[in-house]
Length: 283
Ligand code: PMP
Image (cartoon, rainbow, N blue to C red; front, top):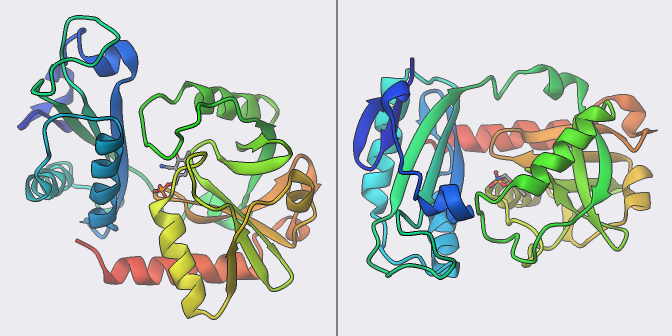
């Protein structure tokens, strides 16, 4: 049985409770972060907290959060649940208030919850085999840069992908790939690596940033530029990045085979280099 975190307390998961009036429950009025754990330590924690603060600011959450306190309860959850490899899910909601569309008083206390999941991040079947992708219309709102818990459309997209026998979906606007249901999308053509620029229409992935840096160290050429579905289908390599998948090869897009159906060599090199630098900066 897991121990989870609710507003300052560590509680057995079956005893953890949040009010039905919580705005996360009624309006998806909450933001979240997923931090991966390797060797029992947190990967890129500072950047996840920085992005969480930004999400809260963009949505005018009242109370501020204390970074040290957040680090402490993340570490405690990892320890209590004996997580060597996996994730910590963190959610901050605007809190509990009588149901009303307008935001409540800015002094309303936040609801802060977190839990862990054990996962094989470094070694799992999709690392070796790659994943297959379908593309789907992007029907989300225009503030995808804010990491909100309003994830119904990405859930629909991933479910549709699985129904079609694929692993995930890349969401598309006007023929251009935006991002995956829960990851950033990348392609490689010749010597060029492309991932879309991070504006209000996609999430600026923490892993995306780290991989851009890693690629620069390897002297690879990365261009933050959008690409079309056709370009993706004809790419030499393709991959996704996220806190839980790191760098994972895409071997099929809408039925078109990419890099002979196996994760490509640049993809593998980027994954290795990413993990190597992540292991050096654990918290
Ligand atoms: N885009 C979306 C829509 C996501 O949900 C995620 C996962 N949080 C990402 C990109 C990747 O972000 P990160 O590398 O910070 O996990």
